[in-house]
Length: 93
Image (tube, rainbow, N blue to C red; front, side, top):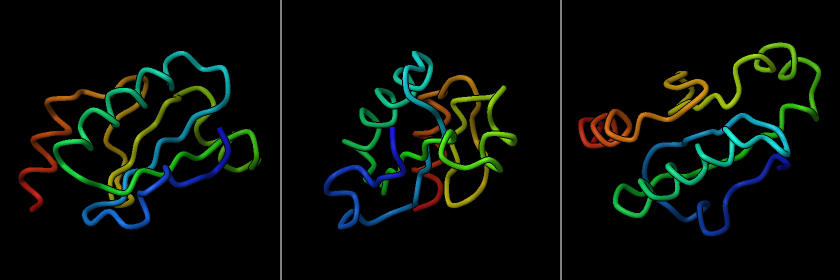
């Protein structure tokens, strides 16, 4: 998991969602699945950020990954509440 936008995300209208995680993290994999499922109905830019590439990110997030932000505001850690994410995206339209 390097810092990367998910293919096609750069052309997606809507909020910017960042998934902070690291390679070989099963909770991060689960969060990604939920984010991809929700993005099919509520388009957003999904960026994955590997915290192991930056000491500041590693210190801030190591014990809490995955962490998901929406437009810069932390919304989830450890898991993504799919219903809460859908509600947030619907209400921010």
